[in-house]
Length: 338
Image (cartoon, rainbow, N blue to C red; front, side):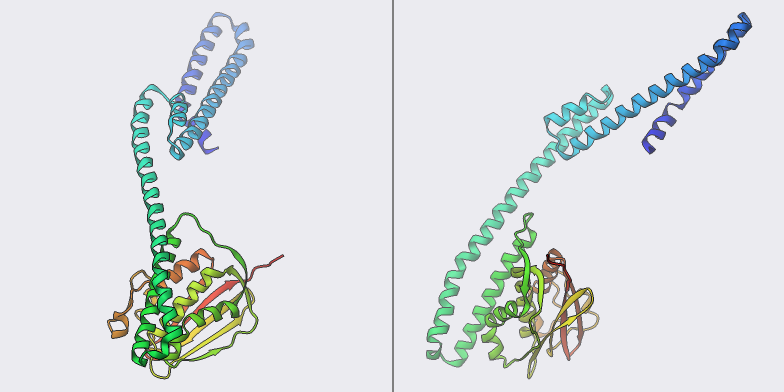
């Protein structure tokens, strides 16, 4: 309707001109034949208004059609959409349209090349990550089967190397996965206890080395989400707790049952985060202050955790007191599963 009034406003001077011509013609008719004037005056004005309305309606339909063609052209500036739009515009607009079409087609070609390069990069990262898993599996096998032949200090160092490599590979894979245009999430009912136990098993050597006391208060809670994505988030959170642990480290895992959500909280008693750093912990590359523990960090763990939470429609909340610990909560909206 707004477009119709714009067209009406554009052609309003023509209506005024038409009415002036009608008025002049009516005056001449009145001067020539007063009796005919009375009969024809209303008919002339009515015919003029109908003609004007039909003209405005015609241009309105043409304008709407041109807008539709233009939207199609912007979405896919190929030869078909370009030719269709050219047939709906004036000669002057056609010259500008040819220039716009060439620019858009060039940009579209560049975008397609970039998308192909991105897919190639994702394939390379995934292939590389799977290749490096072979020596990592060998290291795991040596530590599991012949770890007692190694000195405790060497075994601890190799456990750290294995854990760090595993984390770096996982982060790399999920960084590519989160940036991909295609997602392969599988949303289902996930048992929190079993999902957490698998991650705790992966981190068991480092948890034991650091002598963590783990208090798991989970029971039989179920949430609706992507299992792999959730386990990635849990792995990053627990890895952070291990990195920044202090003396007598403790990890507490609990669930709150709210009216509209299940809230999973993982809390530690490590070094924590300073109050002025807390708003930025989910930013890419952010590591906070420059203590020794922070120097070893890449600033990617919580950033990727936040990205994954966004993809899975989950919320994250973090709390911390410097020197007393850090806690992070994952909020799962309640979903009615039929």
